[in-house]
Image (cartoon, rainbow, N blue to C red; front, top):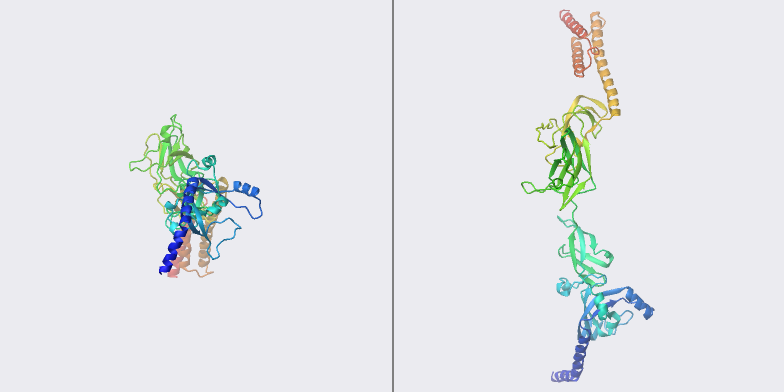
Length: 502
């Protein structure tokens, strides 16, 4: 033990001048190099001359760095120039001697590097870091020290941060990058990780290391301005407009709608009264304003953020009461009263509500999102369904978006079908009457045995058909004469008496 201690002391004494010389050399190199800006250089492939390599280095510069220190020691896995064999005989490359420490400032795309003091993943051996240690012997082959003029030109005037616009992340949905900024960056150069969540997003340049980054949610588009607002309206008079229903493409949970009538005024859409979007008594913001002039909608304004814009719109005029209308399922009906909606007028008017009284028709739904206070349902009396006459008519209510005035060709087809239906009903009544007359004649002549119940049943069916013809409002000349019906009834009573007392 004593001899080993003396040996170490002897070695230290012998090497002390070398340590002193190394420390002095490190101090002198620090004075020369510390604070200098340098640019990492890309290596040229084997066999390329020095002049060509210099051109390649200028075309493909690496990250910008600053020299922060020079020390004497050793490092594992040193960065070496390519095609240079390691001097270590063991499996782990080791470099000893003068070590130069550099701190990367921006990556090769000009994005600010993430300092080691702000890197939470440094302890977990991430892909890289902003600090690099190089043996002094490799410094000249890996970096190029910049002159004062070059350094001033290379140093960014302002910090550039890698921004990731993302979507998702709500209620456990996956987070998806949508856009990266600044413009011109290639996503292939970077690795984006949301493993620790949006707030701890990490972005690393695949070669240069982690960069400063920021995650921003994509501004959720609330209004689809390309989709027109659809309005279903009724012209009450020249100064009064009834907006029965409004359909719009809007993602907001609650939407407030207001109306303004410019009839008889000189106001334009640019005036303050049109562009004003005040809050209501509850503090809710106004979202849409429908502008009417001379019994028609002239503009639909909407507010998104602080901007007031015009939305494309389509106005559908609802048919008047008593008009034949077609539905989206190809049914034909008669329009009843038009329900009351948003009344746009210069002077207040008391109009009836005209709420629907009949149950909704199954299979027809509202077209889209609409104000809750506008149910937009109208009563319809259906007279044709599935290509056949509906008798008695089916009474129901349907969304106004499913209603359209029937065209002339459809009405022509309907009248042909209706006339054929009436002819069949009249023919059926006449056939029943003739059958009863034949049964009575044969029974009285003894040609056939007829039961009174059969006659009564046929006459009951005849009465129902006759009542139906009356409901169909057929002319008296086309229906069975009352005298004929009375004669049939007396004949059945006479036959019943004869059968009873036979």
